[in-house]
Every structure is written in C-alpha cells, then in structure tokens.
Image (cartoon, rainbow, N blue to C red; front, side, top):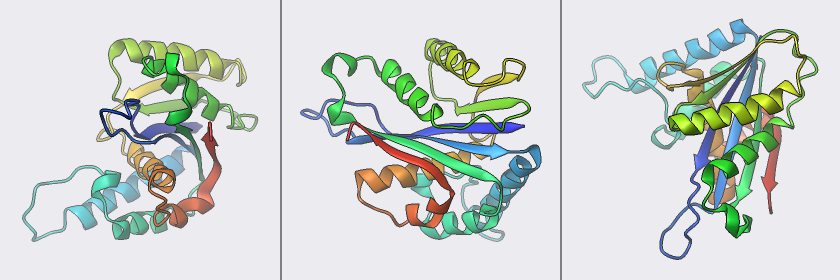
Length: 216
C-alpha cells in the first residue's frame, strides 16, 4: 500500500507591487510505502511532540502538531534521525511566480492543480501493486476540493493500473500526523529557493527523489 502526502509552502499571491507575496511556491509530496512504515512515522511524530514540544513538568500551552515555522532546527533534526531509515521519498516542484502568465494569476486553483499534476507526473507508479492513498492537507474550500479531486484523479487513473484502488482524502494535520512531515519538508525546500537557506534542506536532501524549479 502506498501513501502520498501533499502539502505546500509559500503563497499564491501575485501582487508584487502593492503587497509582499513570496517569490516562489513549493508543492511537495512524501511517498510512504507500506502501512508499517506509515505507522512508524506517525509514532515518531507523536514521540517528538510529546518529548520535545510538551515535556513533563513544564507549564505551557499543549502543542498537538509539528509546524515548520514554529519548530526549531534541533527538533526537526531529532525527528529526521528517528525516521531516516524508513522507506519514504520526497518529491517537490517549486514555481517561480514571477514567470506565471498574466491571465493565470487570478485563477489560483488552476495554477495549484497544474503544478501538483506536474509533480505527480514525476512519480513512478510502476511498482505500486496495491491500494494508493492520496492525502492532502485540508485547506481548500469545498468547490476547490471537488475540482482538485476531479482533476487529479483523472490524471492519476491514467498512470496506474485500472484495477488498483485509489482514494483521495483531505485531512486535518492534527488527525493524520504524517501531514506534519510533508509540511516540514515542503518548508525546507521552499526556504532553499525563497531565502537561499539550506540549513534544514541539507539534513533531509538524501531522501529527495525529485526537486525541480518550474519556470526558472
């Protein structure tokens, strides 16, 4: 069984004159092969949250998930050491937003879906022999979810065995903790392009199967 977790980092704002949007937008997918591997990663995320974010005898607001912007490099490194030997790979594509055609900048959902599809096209599904579960961080509106699912499922069904079950779910990152790691990795790859900051990226780059800049 394969689990594909998708999240993004950056924003899809395009008003570079009156506002300060990010220059880049990263979409990242973490592919976890096997139910046991997924379960182990969840266990290590729970352990990290318990030991590093909610230590005993320290009064603070309870933290129930890992967020890249609020998690120190030390804690990110701690978690990665726990899961580095697990069978998972990272795929990412980063959009140079200044190169997007003017007529597309108002259709953010279309841009998002297109970039996600480009990324999925670089995943080799030839070895997938059981069910595929595609889990996305739940942040879209209902119409956007419907359009994304229709667009992506049509594309995925053309890439995988027609007898293979495919499920697409939009989940809360507190409910499915594996969304936490794709948030961390997406942010690290985004920072490499946006801020030329490789400090976190260099720690997990050995797990990256695909990392591309679109419209360089």
